Image 1 (spheres, helix red, strand yellow):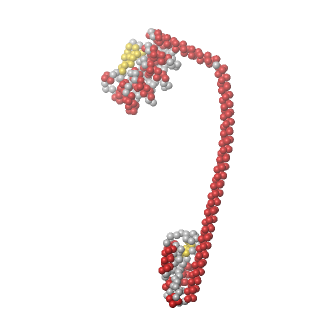
Image 2 (cartoon, rainbow, N blue to C red):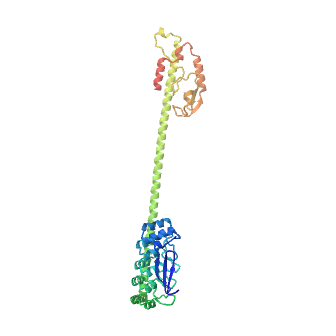
Image 3 (cartoon, one colour):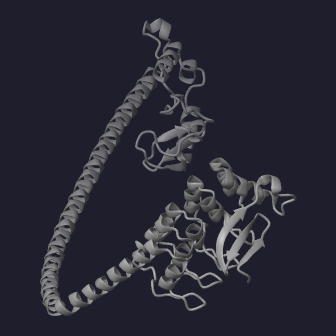
Length: 414
């Protein structure tokens, strides 16, 4: 390259002086005609004008925030145009690359140093993502060299605050940073560089002395710490054993109490079941016994009535002056209270209790003793048929119930 060269891009120009980037110029909006990427141009315009909402809109639209227009990226524009809020907003984006380099191998820190932007240098050098602190551009200049060449004192001061900055590096022509400052006549910067060099040398010497003088002391400290660690480990193991022992005892006690409660619950349940079963059997026995007694009494009454009827013969009730007595000619169904006279079908349970055929269809167990139903009571049906056939058919009171009996039955049903 000659002493001064201008390299043009779509959005601006870069000026080289003696193979060094000395100036970055961006075109105005009026100078841009038919841009290649209108959406990217809108994003660039928002960055240029400090339009934070426009920058955020570019984020949402998915614009490539690290795009290089062959010369520089959006962060470079924010640095050159002093758009600090835009610069900070771009840095917050998760996809931003602060180590991006251009085709001239220049990085963001080069731009900040060349454009004399100490605020940008301060922000970038404090960012842990930065890896281009001592990066060389196409001419072999580091960012610090570029600042020295331009004579930017404040930028040099910011760069020298970083301990990792390399003061011994040389450019492509073999010039050191001290030679460059002396050659360009930047005395103040040269003094800053010398002081920084001396301070770094003193720091290195101090660190070496500390390492040598404090080696034995450090060894003793380490041995003491090792003993402390062993003591702590011993106490820790002791506490862990105590905790394990206590835990085992607590678990055993809890298990024992749980089993005890389970056993008590089972015993209570068995006692309750036995008590309910015993009460049920007693009540069942009493019901059956009472029913049998009542059945026997009723049968005895029927026999007495029949004996009286056989003795009285064909006596006329009106002439004897005795009241008319109408007795049941067949047993009553305990459910519907109707007489089960032929041709009624009669069914019986396992204990011999009877129900009529109509009611049998609606039950599965005996209403008196709660036993299962067995089947037809054929003998009882035949007995009633024979018994009623032997009675005098001229006695209507033996065949049809009286009005009083019908009224009594209705009351029982109610």
